[in-house]
Structures are given as C-alpha cells and as structure tokens.
Length: 228
Image 1 (cartoon, rainbow, N blue to C red):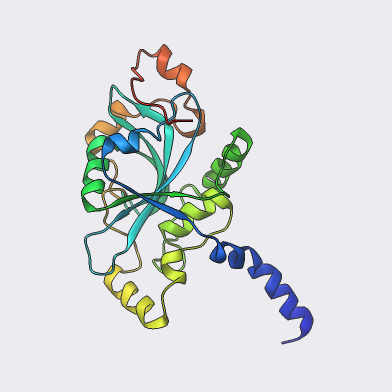
Image 2: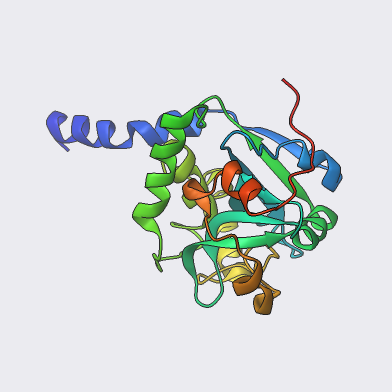
C-alpha cells in the first residue's frame, strides 16, 4: 500500500479510531423513579439507553430516549432505534412505562459522553442524522446494529463497542446466537401494545414535540426534573 493510500485510509478511519478510544459512562438504572430524573419537559434532550437481552451472548439493544416527550397522562414517550416491528427498520416509536420497567428487570443502562448533544443546535444536528436514516432496513448484527445507529445519531460516528471489543471467535459466536436481522428486546418491540399506538401517540414527536403543545392539549407533566 502506498503512503498516499495509507494516509487516505487513516483519515477515513480516524473518527472511528477516536471514538474507539473514548470512554462512555455506563449508569445502571435501578428504578423507574431514577429514570424519570432524566425526563426534561421544558428542555429537549436525547438520552442514550441500552437494555440487556435474556440470552447467553449478553447483547444489549441500544436506543435513544427523547426525554422531553414524556407524557404523564399516557405514561409514554418516544424513542429512536432499530425497531423489529413491522420490519427491522430505523424508526421513532412510542415507549410505555411498562416497557421501561420490564427493561429495568433485565438490565437497563444510560450512557453519557462528552460528545453527546448539549444544546439546541447539537440536538437538531443529531435529529437530522436520525432522519437521514429513518426507514432504513439494513440491519446487521455485526456491522450495522442498534448500537452503531445510536452512536451515529449522538456523535456522527457509527460504532458498536460490543463488536469492537470482541475477538473474531466471539464475533462469530455472537452472530450465530443473535442472527443478523434484529433483536428481540422490549425496546425493539416497543409498541407491543400496538392497538394503543394510534390513540396514544402524541401528535408531535421528536424534534416537533414541545412542552407548550403538551400543556395546551391538557396533558399533565407532573414528573421530576433532573437536578442542576
């Protein structure tokens, strides 16, 4: 390989190399009340979450929780992820308190990183990255899984630490255990109460959902705000 080609490849891989060296802070969620502290009715927020699956591979399904979309009356909010319903595709879906509580039983985690969106401009850029892939159906457990998507939305770099930290044989076993077409967590089944989706889904979700629209529609926002 020539020096020029090697330089081009290094520049292409540099964002991923930087991300690989970064340390995400993993915070276990022990209760729904703990999770509620991250809901921000008066300020838009994106929260990187993951839930453990009940299998030997210890695979975690990653998703982005929109903390400002929680509606107390319906006990639901919106999440961005690689969903398995109706097909494996990138989507925004409703997520209910019961889903969260089931995830907490299996293992629910919140991830923090200095590179994650902190203000309105960064939030818009992150949501634009989601919209650029909305409807995508190219899920692959090893090369384009839900963690790749979550990190891409939050940082612009698609990486799965679950994959990067495995050796070849672990990856092969992982692919064999999980298949290549999707996961079966509660998060990937969000909307398991599918008959309620049309009735309870907020008319404005994602970036278009605002506290003022919730208040004007008579919805209650009685939940705790994260400490300063």
